[in-house]
Image (cartoon, rainbow, N blue to C red):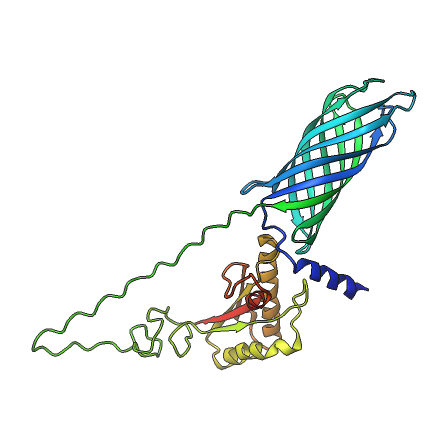
Length: 341
């Protein structure tokens, strides 16, 4: 049963990037349980909400909402009343998986009571609560929420709602810094009737002649490939969903790293974890580090000293292929190994 649940969660999470939009529109339905001295019976309410994501704040979203109770019966009277509530909340989300997150909220509002009785009248209120959000696909999510409202007169209400979420807009993408390419100086012309100066045939001392060196300014004390560029062993390891366990069929490339470290004991290795662009950036950053650490533990189990291993995560940054299709995303789910002396 556990495998079936995990498979369903993985299938739904692969359909979308859960946090690539900037606005959420929600239709809600739920109930209200009055507490204390309100003399009102339990009520059915419905409403609309508008939420917009914000950047560089301690919260993730600001949400505006309106809810209405068409008919609220008084306990000690044959009268009833309608109630309109208007509110604004600040929301902070915490990812659980690529498709699911829980969140906390706090806000203020105002309620209008059409037929005031038994000290029930228009009043402002504060509220707080928690909820769970799950994306069914890229165009639809569900939110289950409970919150507690307290009026300025001290009356209390417990709200429980189910929201139907539709995303809109695209988030601004951070501007990626472009690498600065240093122009190569033109060789000085040889003076007439003077022998040409001796040219260093390996300017960066990496063992690859300048004529064949595609990276003539590679850093010193690094292992390079036949083109003179930093040697990187790219490990396209397919992990199980939300797991850092390395499958047996993925060990071939990992043994290349192990063999190299055994043959070159003076070198250390850096393991860079990468993910595709599905899910939130925060979740992918943690997932990339988990994958790099899994590789590090495997190297240590094969006799490589932990002091020789450094782990790092780029998350969804630095892709090697497009994230627009599954083939490209599979290439981006990887761990890269490079070496330093």
